[in-house]
Length: 381
Image (cartoon, rainbow, N blue to C red; front, top):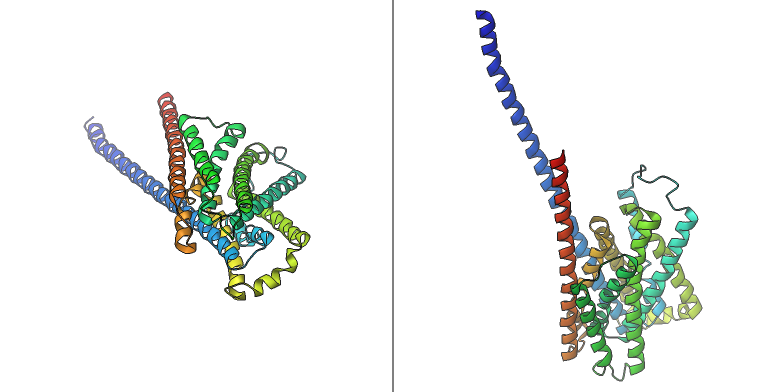
């Protein structure tokens, strides 16, 4: 009896020591998991910041170079359209860096056929070529400051098409954003005297205005149809799939631009255009090359934001750089910045902030509902 009592007394401290060691192990594992999560969190924010820089810098610099091309003697609308999509080969290495896993959640029956994918790429490619051509006409006939402010109407069209195609709810803030941005664009349409001169007739201003508004509407429709295609047809939003949706339509758009160059006869004047470029032949080639590269840098940022966050967030960020373009246009191209443009700029910023705030509220509501669902799941278990 005495021996058994001593054994029990010895076993108790050993078990308590084992429990304390287990607690230490659990605490260590929890700390390691927290540190991993924080590292992933910081890494995610770094990538988001990098993609935003790519998108804003690429978009702003490419637009300014497009205006520089026209100001220094360039006049080919199809060439200006071609460089907006022809830089897609620099995206090809990303296919090897971000290979999609072969095991997918969808069966082979749910995947679209190759013929369906070809028709999708063809449709979006031709749509992209037409959209870029309208942007080229707008940039040719409008000052950069006016052009960028009219492009802000993309927000209004994005709200409209998201309501019709993506089942987005129309709130008071969204309606406010649509009305304000529409007023901003209408202000520039009504008061165009400050932008029309001997070099720019009222007719060309009207063409530039209509083409820019139409291009903004087409691009908003492009993004909404892209979201519908990802969800209902392709049923996948991996980076590999998003990259294909950028590269293949860009290839088709570039081919359409080459056809346009030959059909319009502009291919015959490109040599004379390069020789007559005010800054020289090397500057002419560098302008076109860097315009193509910068548009693809912009696309990398756009694709990254779509992959990491959403297509809606990437669209909002792309419109963020538009109010900054008039200021850059005044600095680099000495555009006139009269009272009407300043008011239009303030209205565009106001509409943009209303749009962003509504998305912030929606995101906060989604996060709170998700956390409540997680808490309910934990309680039930």
